[in-house]
Amino acid sequence: MTDENPLLKQAISLSGDPDAIRKFYADWAETYDVDLLQTIGYVGPRIAAEALVKRLPKTALVLDAGCGTGLVGSELISRNSALTIDGIDLTPAMLEYSRSRGTYRNLSQADMMGSLSGIDDNIYDGIVSAGVFTNGHVGPEGIDELLRIAKPGAPIVLTVRDSAWEADGFKATVEQLEQDGKTRTLEITHCPYHTKEDVYCELVVLEVV
Image (tube, rainbow, N blue to C red; front, side, top):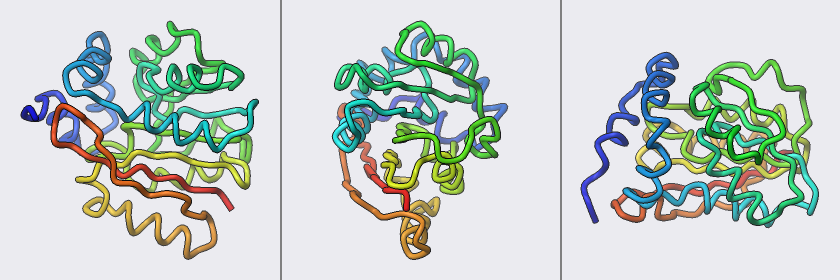
């Protein structure tokens, strides 16, 4: 295993400041895919897409929440070309890379730490979010809006970096959502996240009640 990539170290130290996050990813957008896929062996998009697709009907409307450069969208379409995918992200520069892939129906800028006011209630058949719920980015409070915009029975697939899982309150939030009758927890699996580094995540699959 190699030492953790310095850009990743910087990313998880951003403290959730949307302006800092937006600038950081705008500066990183051009080399993001190479740095993640080739340098650190990032598999979040693949494992998240696999977990979602197997729980969806053939035709479904999906939201890629925090779509970045569109890695998850490509993984979804490679598994089911009949899916319709929307994407949201905080950083316009990243959205431009997603747009260039041609895999998304709609792409829009949004801050997942706030209200997703431009999206109606109960419209998505499934939601996926890879690499977003992590240190210095979106906290567990961001899950509430995903529940609002997902249809009852819809699967929501999240990767949560293991260093944030308990420390940032994700574990407690997922447990509380189930206790409150808002979700059913279908899966929580401890998975390799950066295969060329000693970094793991929790692959979390919730069903909206």
